[in-house]
Image 1: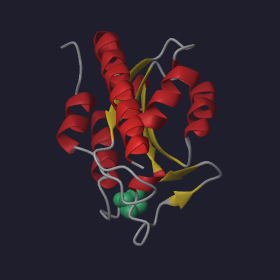
Image 2: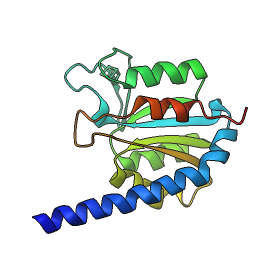
Image 3: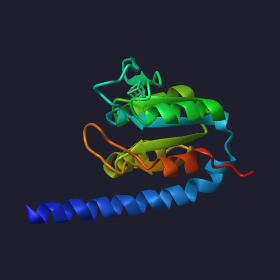
Image 4: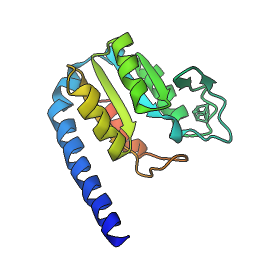
Length: 160
Ligand code: SF4
């Protein structure tokens, strides 16, 4: 058991280093992309599942800003800044599908370190999309959470 948790912590540390490095590499390019060409991906585990009134599609939800969780604040902010859209995705495989359809120039992805690492390596590495990763500070299958200050700092990134 102790050995398992050691390997888990070690893997998490490796993923964290990798994703922090990717954020640094892409920051300048991300900042130069107009808000209207950016998409935000949020994991569905961040919803308040007991209160959520989001509209459900096949592979994602559309937030109705009921203020039941932080997604409401993110959704309002991206509308104010005129980001292209926000998707509350049911899984990382959906991200590739949406990117193919919508062809954003930049994305912000909220995820745990494991999912973030998977998406970067399997989907984003092959594409020319400036990406900023926002880690879940509390991960799990539900009731996950992020640091809103970190999220806002990334949402507002520009070269101006
Ligand atoms: S703010 Fe949006 S995502 Fe959060 S619980 Fe309400 S409708 Fe669902």
